[in-house]
Length: 294
Length: 344
Image (cartoon, rainbow over all chains, first blue to last red; front, side, top):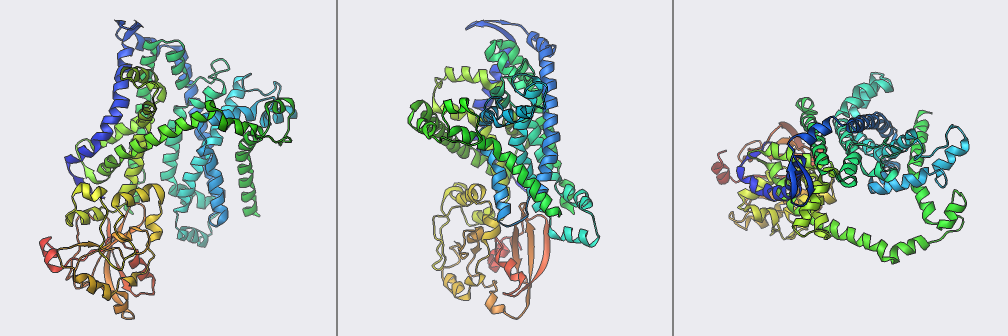
């Protein structure tokens, strides 16, 4: 749709600009302010230049947290995207069963994030949780399952939580993409005698490209900002094994009150996010552009 | 059989989906001592004490009240701020629009932890600590950009021609945005009380399918009798003609009196007249028609129409073409004078 060119539209955007400026720009400037000073107390601060930035950039714990973050977000995508596609493919296409599936699928998405944490803690606890008690009674593991005991168990619980919570989103998006494929495509494929795999490869997957891009990017960004779940589960432990970027940042800022380093870290974190956000925006703008012409 | 295997796998997945929730429910119906004492797959001694506690103990239920207060505040604020902006982004090109939109989006993606410290300081400076409005304001950071984003998408799905029609009819922007669309049609099911904002919101928030399925209404309602009724109104009064009975956008269809160019189904029954229609694909896949008779006596408003395809649809009340005809959104026929004034 062609748009009207009119700079007066700024007046319509102004309210949003003011409110977001109040809750974003001013706080961000405060962070910048912290990041270049050493604050001993109210009215007692020393300018330190880029010292905090240098300190944070060479901080091995930050590197570790960043590494963990990438592994976590990568794993999330690797599991959730294929699983979501499979679920979307298996879902009934119409009738009451389709509606019922959609509603069931949407349930985890409606639960508040820290409640998800609580649900899964209770579910996996080795003394009262169904999963914890169940897997331990099978006696398969060398060390009894307890998400506070070993990093691998904490990671497993966290991944299960994340997959449980967000795969439905991917599945719903894919389902919407699949439903948008005209029946004629399938009929044509049938006439050609295409196999189910060929139909998936040449019809369904290409047609799902748009929604899949959105799903991948949303899941990547959201898992990159994860805080509530690991915080509820173990608070970043055992040890530092589930300390992701947000957790580490909050530890620095409110646990140790290292305002300067925390602020510098915030800005670095924000820049990383900004970079992804930019890629996200570009991809969203360009996805499916070639398709529309046809 | 393949289908059954699929269904089985899906049911298994749903079972996994439900298990943690079931376990939570199980726990909620048992007392603490019971939970810690015996492991049981289902609650054998059901108790509702936990629920009673949550709803009678102020430390519990005040949390829900707080949440409701700030959520309502935040919803009102987000919508009030985001609606005009979403409209601007969806309809106008202005200096820095792309950058502004991107900036808003970055706030949606900003790690909340980054804002933890400054919020504390900012809100204590302006004496907002421990107030609902502070929480509501803080959440605006994430919700306003999201609202702008979503509403922009929905508004872009509403054909711009509707706005054009309103402006040509002399609706000032605030009037167009907030005021009821006055209906003078005696026979129409809808009068007053429907305003475009409502439609836009209703479409965006309440009924995403309002366009798609609302339009299968009785086109023959638009009969010559009505035409005569309206032609008495005079050409100065341009009327929103709500002749579609459903809640679709169809009620925004406007007939400009005198509208001698409209051919009704009854007049053409069996004659197989052909109409040329310009079909516009609106982004969400609804159809948007401008149509005009072959003789081109009455032109349509041609500006701002992109991705146009001309299709020939036989006008027969009983065939598919007619069904399409009923689902158009902005049906405009100009009297010759006005058409000339617009340069057609």
